[in-house]
Length: 502
Image (cartoon, rainbow, N blue to C red):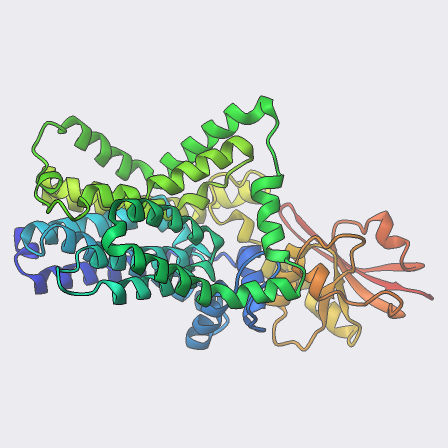
């Protein structure tokens, strides 16, 4: 195994080969699952057909990424997810390069690079989220690249200007914010670096912040012109959704458990092994120039501030586990730098193998007939893809009835059902839009794509529902006729014709 880190060329080849093999494995596992898209993925795909500078609940990055991905590989499940899957592995590659650069660009650096990159790919966050199209994919790549550029700026030799690195880092910060607002938390890491290095890097970091604001500004203008929907939605789920005092301790405990789950059994085990060998010398912590930031400290600077912000959020309101996914970059970098000194290559490859194999095994467990049956009967706990199943078959079952009643438009009241219908019936020339809600919009389609405006209600529509139409919906039209229904496990869809006259 030692020859794999014997030269920069063999190291780079080994890293690229490992990441390529992981990508092929994930593609194979994802396709073998037979699952469709999750409702958020279907929504992002729908947005990708009409690119804009913003959407109701997210900035535009994921829609642009899916537009590029489907242009490359088609509108199928793989086409929607492909570039998101690549982003996770590119982030691991950037992290590996950063660890190599930090640890000296020699044999020790090459070992550190492999450790950092493979530790990240071995996390459940990468292994599970890395097989789907989420806003975390471009966020992780932007965060990793920002870290690498920040490090190179801090390591700029005396007499050379670090400004180009800071300007590029600012552009990546802006692009990351166009993918997910969590990217703004990187500003807390930069604030720590600013306090430490403001004399030489203060101007560059201020300029980087201005560049980031300029790159992000189109989304701000879009929000301002549409009543601030994205920022308002983000505030709702982070600030306004306060946790009762009696539930705060449970919320914090749930958050901490979630972070251990994100890091995964391999990362936690490596951390425990490193703790047990903590008395060994740590050259990285000692062999750095006084004017430069310590590599281990740098890694934690890009992890701990985000974790602390999310911990505070968990005290105020529920914090979703994946909100802190970028902190894994700093943690895996820190663990990789230490593991390269204290653990051997054998431990590296076992860690990588287990980290990649465990999520794949969990996913493939869904191929078991028993697990499939349990998922259909309402116990989907062992099937990672449970919430993505059944949509294609039920929509295909209803399509002939919808086609017979064309050109009547289809009204759908629920966001998830709407986007799944649009995705399943793509290319059929059907009009599928939101049943207009009352009062404040609940989602993107309520605000921007209702089937009709007040006073412009059509005489007749098709209505797609889960189970029965609500009493409020029945009051809008006088006559209702159930045309068809389809069921897959707990998913029960009904198609109705609603009209003002019989």
